[in-house]
Length: 311
Ligand code: FES
Image 1 (tube, rainbow, N blue to C red):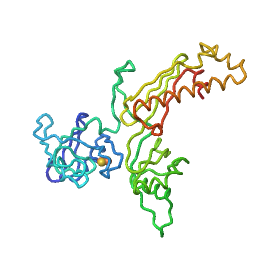
Image 2 (tube, rainbow, N blue to C red):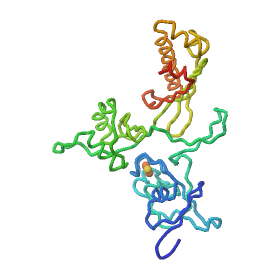
Image 3 (spheres, protein in one colour):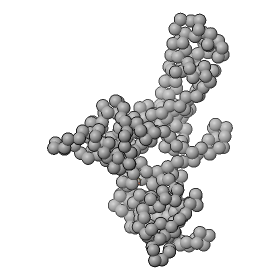
């Protein structure tokens, strides 16, 4: 510890990012300042439990510090609810714990906002950083009052701005239609599903962090769909089928010719691939035990002809 100005030395592992922060700094803020992005769906309300970190205890001559769980403020009520009897142990919620001494902090992979995964089944050991376009955010909204004018959507926007510092968001019609019932079902707590920090795709009652996406490769011969957990990058199920357009032409040139020569040829090939994709996605969702309406994103790749026939 540096005496006098009450700065504390904090080191995050395994990244090794380190620095000095003022006494009383939230562990979450220290992580942010030092370049460690922790998961935070509830934006520090202590409800999502995603910002869990481990405090190493003892002397660490290699790092030149002595770290101890007592170098953090006592566990908050939220943490006690989260960890039960283990609340005073070495696992803490970074959004709740304040720094009062030097610390060596281990960040589990699951607590990182952008997880690194190694994809083996795609014939590569290349580490991938998971940074999905769609993410869930937990929001607590002011209850509706008879004497208050703002509607549910206005109060939701205010709450998102205050709790997540996001404004100017748009909400799609599907989400807007269910907003009133959702807020009340969740006792004024909701999880919004947000695309690129701009569009609200869905609103769900209470806290729910499941969001899924599907990556599709439309080949001229085969079609493969991977159902992925957008928060962890895990591939939960993979389904494959023959491209049904084969029946109308084995290669790209013969399919283009089919479209040019046959009345409704384009529509026939388009319908065939859409039906196949819908079937593959439904079957992947079923085998992974995932609700199909929790799939919010779809990425499709293919050669130029396959892409145009899909669109
Ligand atoms: S950010 Fe949700 S519990 Fe800490």
